[in-house]
Length: 358
Image (cartoon, rainbow, N blue to C red; front, top):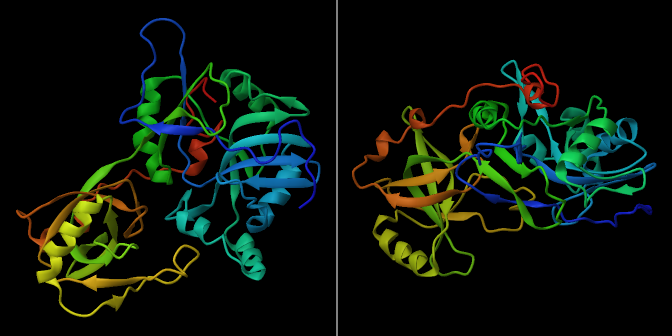
């Protein structure tokens, strides 16, 4: 890795967001105080470019550049010579005639074998969506208000094939509409930023509103907690016709509750531990993926954010048991299906951007 000689020192921890249940509204009178943008569901990355030297700083301060060689080349072609931009790395793919984000394809890009990295760079090329400017041409903008940083970003990041700028709006109703519509493009909610806020590294100064839903799932088994004490996660299933499919797990238990649930489920055990059908990947290759199967007699209500195909995108959160429900009634039909939407419509200047917004 070559040297980077910029006013902002590598690495920079990104500014973070605190969760909210609803989109914050603008004041009833006076000018807007918020700017809203879609929440991209990818890898957060702060791009450092100093001539030919390009780094993609992850949230944890690691350089992701070796995993995205095609994006490094695109940044050299499409971004200014000396710049630091905060944004998200995503993998858009055409699915059923529309372009949407593919989380699985993005996750596969983090791989130790260079040959596989190069193959995936051609097969599932990534793109960078910028949403904040930290430095340009020797000038540090981190202490400037976000309104000024956004305006400068639009000026200097003129865009290209693989480096784009996210859409924004200062209209609360539009942001609420985006929250519903853009999920069909694979996005993850809405972010609200104060127009007068400076860039505060590693501080939760933004507001994020993510999709949250509930589902009744058949309980098919559990994994023991990594400590060896109590439940680590409950394994969930949904019926697809007569076939019961594992969709993921639910967790978030106190230490006391872990032990209680483990004892509670022992009468439902049907045999020895078995190995799950999940393949080893970068997250689980060194982990014990064994689980304990149970008789399918219980239903659990969980909170979740999104589905990825037929599985949960992220771990669900246990809410309560549903003794009033039959496991056979836990089908995919209950899940809310997001409206189809195209990634191109979520970028600045996209075909569905409301007039006067960028």
